[in-house]
Amino acid sequence: MSKKAKKTEKAETAPEMKATAADLEREQLSAALHAIVEGNNGVLNPRRVVDVARDPTHVLHRYFEWNDGDAAEAYRLLQVGALVRHVRFTVVRADPATRQVAITTTRGYQSRPSMRKEHGGYEPVTAILSDPEKRGELLAQVIAELTAYRRRYAELSELQPVWFALDEARADLSGDASSSAVGGDEAPLGAAG
Image (tube, rainbow, N blue to C red; front, side, top):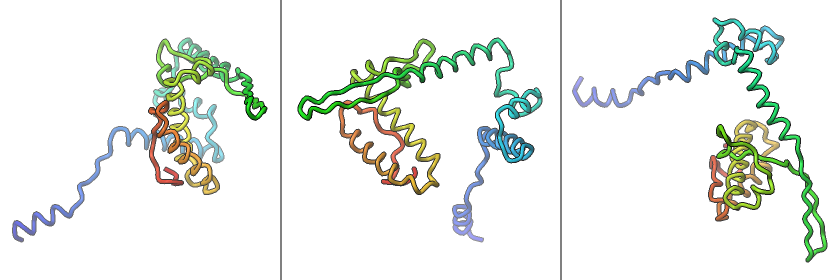
């Protein structure tokens, strides 16, 4: 075989893809959770996952906090989030030109991504909406969350009108200077992304 033929043969052979540590870990987690599903009548029950993970030799064990004091504190922080999400504000907007009043109820507090650090937290929605930079960050967060839902539920063709509306909103917001942070996972119009 000539040198030229050997070079052509090598170029046509695709390199083997090596699994990364993250790929292997994902496979182990998937297999462990699937085993729980199989042993629990096709249901992945959270309590059963914790029970299985109690075994220090089980692959899931390291994903949990087993120090009860630390776990209790972490749970209290989750409870704060649930408590804050229950607070609602009623917003009344009057349009003097049309003499119409719009009344909406919204969350009282939001957590912007830039506020999710050690000393961050939640801010009143009214403060976020009245500040163009904060408002832009919140809009970018909403677009990112909706795009994640699009990927998660891509197989539900009944949601195509929702994805079209998302594309339209993203296009509208990308032209708005106050929401320059809005971007996200660009997907073709109506595609599941």
